[in-house]
Image (cartoon, rainbow, N blue to C red; front, side, top):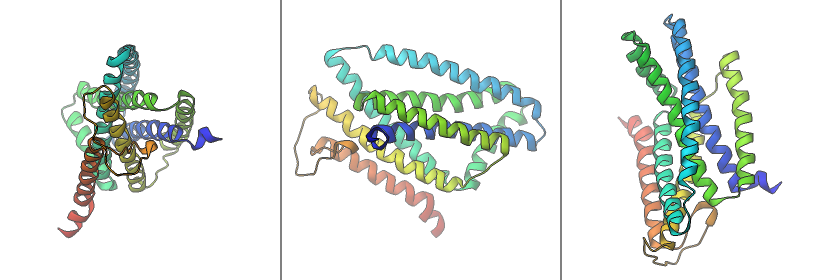
Length: 262
């Protein structure tokens, strides 16, 4: 039971759920838009694109595992850098999600991608749009799971992955086959909140790893330690996390309050 309540399970579930569902939403939105403009024949190109993205993603995963065969001090450096990079990417994705929290903005984003391809009647461009949209999700998933595996037990992560894939499979079927829609605002805001928490956690863990090998200094401060969120009582970990929180606040303000006051 504890595996299903652990930070590892929740983090793993959140990552695969968000990344997979975003890819499904993008493909579904493109399918729907092509239907609207009468470009049904282009759907075959979309299928080729997302399948190719998954295959290339598999090769990327093999390459990433090879990178992590390093041992000793080098392994800790790779772990630290990977966690910090994952933190920054997670944060960027979270900010992007906040900016697309309104259904209108999401619709405009999809249409801007596809109009570029269809207006030029360029199927290669359409292929590239879908391929890189899906591959980005696959690449981010690999990066995040490599970071998770450094921190948590593989059993809970595997359970979270399986549960996430199962839930996304059901939602994907409903979206693609039954044209079911749901409130994008709550989806974007809910997943963004989880991404920001993971971003803060990865940042703290990554810097701690680099502190252990002496790359960063360790300046202890009076602050509570909360390992699950990657919060440690050192100046070197808390300052970057505070910067992320400030940037997050600014992004939320720009996405909602600034626009409302304009």
